[in-house]
Length: 72
View 1 (cartoon, helix red, strand yellow):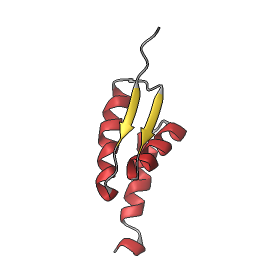
View 2 (spheres, helix red, strand yellow):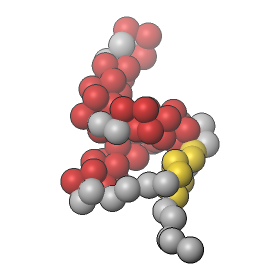
View 3 (cartoon, helix red, strand yellow):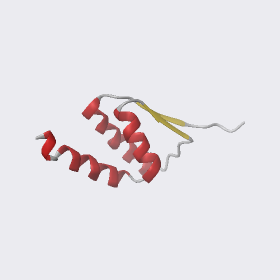
């Protein structure tokens, strides 16, 4: 049976944005995940990554969210 790899991301509100830096490294190293799971903010980041497979767009979305008027 082939080895399968899962990415598990934890919660933590705004700290969940730290997952983006780790995902950026995984992308650069061409690490592939068979499963992506997460809880709370980790689920949001994981879903975005699973959908786009592009950390740059997720970083832009995170930056725009933090700069939004509602969080000022």
